[in-house]
Length: 146
View 1 (cartoon, rainbow, N blue to C red):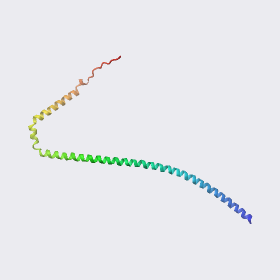
View 2: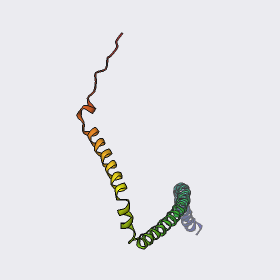
View 3: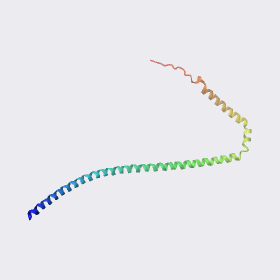
View 4: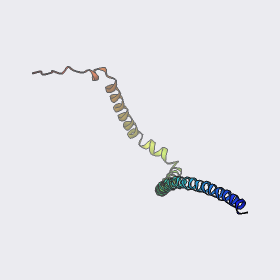
């Protein structure tokens, strides 16, 4: 009776040893695979941390630039409002003196005429100087060689 059980128990033991060897092989494969995955994931985490740092710096820089742009826009807006108010004052002043301006021009017509003629004369002289071909004639330069 022990012979029959002995043969079965040895087969069971051999089966368990084979099963243990297969289990150990699967465990070893899983361990090495998980170690490789952890290395990859650790590398990815480091890259992500670097990327987050770069993005944080970029965001801070962009916020700073946006604040500077906002301040400049506010200054320009204030300047525009001042010039617009000045323009409105000038329009009111001209509208107020619309009737007197022609009289002032008639009284000082000779002065305006002299001013315009003098300016025209200067412009014509400059035009003649610019278009005179003799102006651009180059004279030969003596070259001294030793």
